[in-house]
Amino acid sequence: MSTQSSRAAARLMLSPTVILLLIWMIVPLAMTLWFSFQRYNLLYPERSGWNDFANYTRFVASPAFMSAIANTLILVVGVLVITIVLGILIALLIDQPLWGQGAVRILTISPFFIMPPVAALIWKNMFMNPTNGLFAEASKFLGLSPYDFLGQAPLASIILIVAWQWLPFATLILLTALQSLSSEELEAAEMDGAPAIKRFWYIMLPHLARSITVVVLIQTIFLLGIFGEILVTTNGGPGTASTTLPYLIYKEALLDFDVGTAAAGGVVAVVLANIVAFFAMRAIGKNLEG
Amino acid sequence: MARHVTTRRKAINTAAAWSVAILLFFPILWTILTSFKPEAQAVASPPIFLGFDWTLQNYIDVNDQRDYFRFFWNSVIIAVGSTVLGLVIAIPAAWSMAFVPGRKTKDLLMWMLSTKMMPAVGVLVPIYLIFKTLGLLDSRIGLVIVLTLMNLPIIVWMLYTYFKEIPGEILEAARMDGASLASEILYVLTPMAIPGIASTLLLNIILAWNESFWTLNLTVSNAAPLTKFIASFSSPQGLFYAKLSAASTMAILPILVLGWFSQKQLVRGLTFGAVK
Image 1 (cartoon, rainbow over the protein chains, first blue to last red):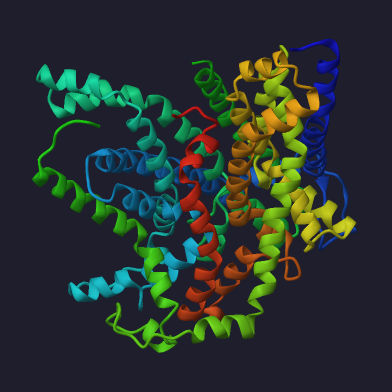
Image 2 (cartoon, chains in turn orange, yellow; image 1 turned 60 degrees about the horizontal axis):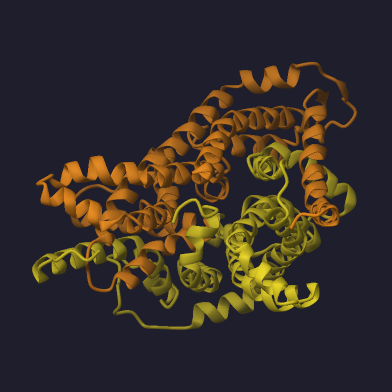
């Protein structure tokens, strides 16, 4: 099929995508890199010029930086653990014979389609609010004093909100993988008297390995950029208790107008993401071979 | 699974699964219920589940006072615009990689996906400044451009996955029967490609509709879509639970329904066919 002319046509058809993505990647990255070495504050335009590594040292030395890195990692890992463990359990449950499986599936997957600011505000106002949220009402009903979720445990609360949004995705992917498992293998194991735990550990879990990898990869890409949920719930606070790397850079750039420092932060974020991406791409590549 | 289970076992499974499903769905249900409550009953203690005075007043208020449809319309234009533009650019690319693969095709695909790994926040500053210079801040065109570029790798990958599944033998058979190139494309390939293109369209509208990093940072009010509109309720003076619920319900319902219809394709589309 691939003659000389068809190959030339293919190259022509490919070029718009390739050129656009090259521009999209190189131009802003080059600018970020350039700004990161400049003294550049929109509030003080007269103070400009080459700044060596001052932006980096300031960004990295600020107390907010270490907590932002830690919070970002805790958020990503926390949500991954919750969604994968619960996702496997729920997928196993839904995969059992039951009435109304289609409806159960639809209800379970729903949170995935809720836009982040809506999800965050539902939880903030109607569930976690310490005066009239449903959790506070439940505590009062039980005779306990209400807990201020976003004030006392901001990061854990945000993890809960984000996990609620991503649990459906993990469940759906894992359920799909479970349903492709041949029942003969399971039945044979059952005949041989293997207990449920062993059947899960030695047959189901290895079968799920590939889909778990995919869930980890895709969720990591999206979770590293979590922003809207934090903006409408805690604004990164109290203090820096729920500030993540994206939020910190947003704050430097659009609230403090310190372009130079924000750009240095952007470079740090890109480097970190590339470390994650290196492992991610290798795993995807391996998965596609099979 | 064809295994035999007792009715008792099935009843227990059903009860457990429905409990989990309703628990996960409850926040959405509660929002929809709250949207029909008078503001005073929305914050009543103890909470009122169904025995409140049902009203449509919140919907009317949100539309009248808050100019809701401008934001809704912005969301539609940005989500549909960026998806369609992305498809126009990506279809030829995915097509050529699926049917005329070269030695470098796989590397090229990987590189495209890797641009998705670039964190948006890493390029926020330059994009913001470029948009400021070009007057694209708070404009629909600006957002369409950014979301198109952001989702382009995903669109290419999804289409590639779907196109790859079109068997090449069918093409050869049509050619044997003496079909011309035009009729080949029109009668053989297009009908087989349309389901994949439709799924890609649907999934990307969902992604673009809910995208909030760029919409929150690049818009103020003119081009602000629903994500920005809802986020504006987070300020203290905007804490009207019933009205916020009405606005939220209108913002999520269209996409929720689209999502229910596309849940099967979602697995294939978002995992690039790696999970079956």
